[in-house]
Each structure stands twice: as C-alpha cells, then as structure tokens.
Amino acid sequence: MLHVIPLGGLGEIGLNAMVIACRGEMLLIDCGLMFPPIGTLGVDIILPDFTYLRRNAAQLKGIVLTHGHEDHVGALPFLLNEVSVPVYATRFTLGLVRHRLQELGVKADLREIEPRNPFPVGTQFKVEATRVTHTVPDAVGYVVHTPEGPIIHTGDFKLDPDPIDGLRTDLERWGELGDQGVLCLLSDSTNSERPHETGSERLVEQTFERLFRDVRGRIVVSMFASHLHRIHHVLDLARTLERKVVMMGRSLMRNIEMARELGFLPSVTDGLFVPLENAATLPPERLLVLATGSQAEPRAGLSQLAAGEGPLRLGPGDLVVLSARAIPGNERAVSGLIDQLLWRGARVVYPDVEPGVHVSGHAGQPEQRRVLDLVRPKNFVPIHGELHHLHRHLATAKDSGLSPAQLLLAQDGDLLVFEEGQGRFSGSVPTGRIYQDRFGQGVVTPDILQERTRLAETGFIVAALVIERASLSLLAGPQLTGQGLNLDEQVLLSRVAEDARGFFLEMSHQLRGDDARVREELAKAVRRAFKLYTSKRPVVVPMVIKV
View (cartoon, rainbow, N blue to C red):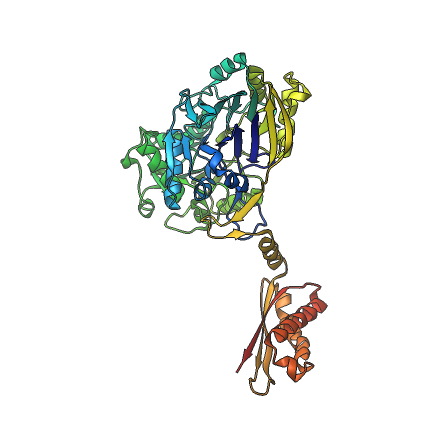
C-alpha cells in the first residue's frame, strides 16, 4: 500500500510539499513557502504546517527538490531545524539552497544528483530525476519507483522546443515510463486555463534584441533574481552593445555570483560590471542596469529608481523593461510603480504593452495534454495551483481519455491510498499554514493577525491618567494620543478626552486604588466616547501614572 499526501501546493500557488509514504518510510518532494497576500500585516512568509512530518520524523528518509524557487525550497531551513534528513537536488538548486541555509545558520546533509541517474532513498524508494525546462537552471521532475509502481512528479515545467540552455523537458523518458505503466502522474497545473502553448524563451531573447538596439539612454531591466536564463541573455546583450552592467538588488548579485562560480554564466567576466556608485559617471548610452523589484517590492532596486533615490536618476531617453507579470494581488502596486517610472520621463515596457518581454515557465493546456497522452497514467492528480487550476487540469485529463475513476482532485492534507493500481481517498492528516517573519523569530497566530487587522482598520489610542498617589485625586488627563486615525478623528481627541474624564470622577475612593480597574474603566470610557462621534471602536491602550 502506498500513500501520497500533499502538505501544500494543492489549492494555492506556493507551499509546495508532497509526501510519498510506503511501508513505514516517507519521502518529501519539495519544501516551499508562500508570500503573504495583502492584508496579512507583519507577516513576511507563510510556511506549510509540518506537524505530520514532525510526528513521523523517524520515517522521513529524504527530501528531493525539483528546483530553486522559493515556493519549492523556501521552507526547507525551517523544517531542517526540526528534522535531520538528507536533501537531494541538482547542482544549481543546491547552490541556491546552500546560501539560504548558511544565512539562517542551518546545517544540512546536501547531496548532488544528476538527471537519469537513479538513487535510493531509504529501502522503499528508488528516485530518478528527469530534466524539465523552467525559468531557472537545473530544474527537474522526479520518477519515484515504489513497490506499487512508478509515480511521475513533473515539478514546474514547460515544453520549450528551443530553450536557452538547450536542455529540453525529457519527454522521451516519460514516454518510456508510459509504455511500461505509470501508477500516478502528479502534474503542474499553474497554466491549465491557458488554451495556447507557452511561448519559447527565444521570443524574449528576440524582443530584447529589438528593443535594446536603438536606445540612446540607459537600459533598465527588472525580473526575478532566479531567472538566470534570461539574466544570462541580458548580460550577453550588454557585452554585445558595449554597455557596462550595474546590479541593483542583493538577491540578484548573490545569484549571479553563485551562477558564475558554478559555471552557469561562462561568458560573463568581471570587466562587464561597474559598482552602482560609479554608474552616474558613465554616459547613459553605455549603461545597462539589472534591478530587482518587478513586483514593486518597496526596498528593491527598481523602486529606488522610481522614487529618485540613489546615485542614478532616470529621465527621457531611458528604457525600463519589466520582464515579469504581476503576481496576483500585486497588480495595483506594480501599476503604481509603472506610473512613477513614467513620471521620471522614462519609456516603460511591460507584458501588457509588449507581450514578448516575458513568457511563462509553466505549460499551457496543449502541453499538459501532450504529457497526459504520453504518460497515460493509471491515476492522475493535478498539483501546483489554486482550485480552479486543478479543476481545469482535470478537464484536460478527461479529454485525453482518462475515466472519472482515474481522476483524483486532492487538496492539502488529503491522504491518497494507491493499491493494486487504483487510487482512493482515505481520510486526512493535519495541515495548514504557519505565518511568521522571514527569519523564523516569531509565529504570527490567527488571533495576532486579526488584532493587527483591527488596528489597521480602526487605529489605536494611548490614554494616560495622572493620579496623586496619596489622595488618589486626578491631577491630569486623560491625555489621548492617536495612531492610524484620519485628520477629523485626530481633531476629536480633545472632545473625547473631556467626555471620558467623567468616569474617574464617578469612581469611589476604593476603586481608584485598584490600578487594573482604573485602566479597564479608562479604556471603556474612551472607546464609548469615541464611538459617539465616529461609530468606530479603536484599540485603546490605557496608562495610569501615579506621582
């Protein structure tokens, strides 16, 4: 009997973590995080709930990683702080992971693997990486050979016929396995609603060459720092156009340095780069800027340029290229960033006005159908996507000829059982989301998040009373100081203070000696008075000062 248990990634974009369990041993595929949506105040990252893995730590024999994006590896340091197991990945993925682990002071047993070279994990699993094309180098899917039959996990993939690095998705191997019989296909659903094939990265290459050719000012390109294929082409173009390159963004610098050390940027030399502080001395037509911040992150390089901060000042004649689509939820922020750049006088090109500046790294419907037709699995589970993505991928699988009994719509925490070639649901395991800051120094509980949201919506008031210690008479106050209030509400504070003052004068001498009771009644009085004028109930922080 074999179990497949998604701990994340089925019902959301991110948190990718899939457990495969058999005869008392477990294997984890990916260990990703998710970035918080708007409204999760003070939360930097969201992690899967690893309660199930902690409870079964002795059974976990290894973790295999498909590629180096945060939604697939970002939670790894937090799990390895609690569970010590070998981690298997390709060379570039290990390079990204190694730096992140060192940054957080986490030690790990990291083991480099090669596609098509099977390796054992425990006694129940023989694992084989299969090359896939994605937006980051060295991406792979996995074939997990189990006593019940092989499982194919595609990872994130697309079928680019002419990838920048020449390494295509290994359809030949998947086809061989399909001929032999595949127990279950777990396949990327991110672009399942797109009816057309995903474009080749060569389209971006050609678009950049056309756009850059006649630019008389500076060229600024912003993309995800992990998109090394695209970065490599931009660097090659800069050399061809005899432009020096400035890097703005710590993650970008780190990834390029690491990629050069590992040999993934063989044509790039030190002479291509200049420090940011020297960039303003170069003629605009001799400068290309690589910047983080395509998602309008406040502290990123592109946001600094848009705000006019730092030594570089954009202006007419400069070209800014946003080589990424806005992540859902970021649209307004990215739109505001574009407007800021336009106010600087620069020409701004982004996917909505020039589709060729970005192509996705995920397969569309025709490519997903091709994989289904090739593998012909006994069971199919769509992964990596929100519920509507999973549903649409199931529809494609049904069109490919799979019967309803072969289609398994799973969600996080579902326990799928595979026995004698058939899959079924058999309960669930604990799962969920853990909200916390990026360095794991504090978990943000739902109650804390709710309180932060309330603070943001209603504001808060510090109310202070000054009482004479011996006589318990009122010397001053309540004095009110508000945060998160609009101008009209700030003006009302003096009137609210006057109305709230009466509560203390009505208290008996005995109750005035109880500081806790005075604070409680002070908070009630301020909230009550404030609500009379505004219908809002802000959070009130009462203070009693005795002199």
